[in-house]
Length: 232
Image 1 (cartoon, helix red, strand yellow):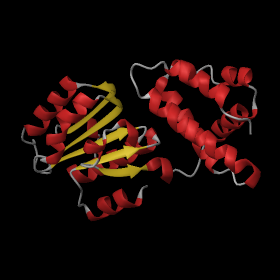
Image 2 (tube, helix red, strand yellow):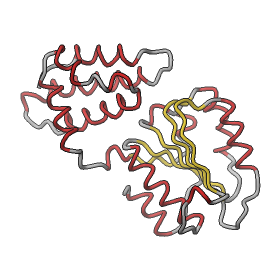
Image 3 (cartoon, helix red, strand yellow):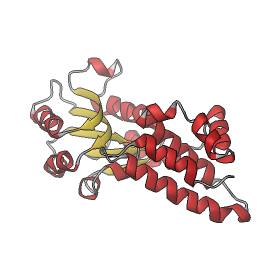
Image 4 (cartoon, helix red, strand yellow):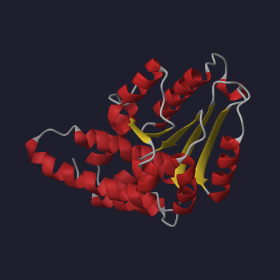
């Protein structure tokens, strides 16, 4: 677990809002653990009246209004309220609508925003949240994922497209795959390959930023990446 949030859980003293990035499964796990501590609840959190968990592919203005209304109501119990929002894409308009909510949060209301990357959140909103980067914290990758990434990097473009065929139908899986590729490339230590790895990491970062644009075709972006990355 990330050291900052672990310290907050141990001390039972929390900031009003957190942005958890990277491994979605790990982010959800520690957000739920923190919520259980805040609400002093040992049972199933989904049944707690002061707990809210929602998953959005795209978080919009109406969602912002709904969250504001939820946060303004008084808790059923005295331990506060916790909202965990699993967001793939947050529009600039809805992010701006959340600014005041995160700038002047109601007492006893805590927010955990889960996102694949900090870049999905505009800087002004990001600055109101404590960033927990679990992408950096994760040290282990599944063996099958390592094999997929290595095969992808070592294949010709035609072979690469075939290996990620299932990823081309799911934007979230595409983001996760790019995160895994970064981990593999960051572990490249051979001097002869470091320059190529650095350029590849820059290309992956650009691709991820384009994928977060709702108007973009993430399938075309992934196809471009398969052509653009050097072989390793």
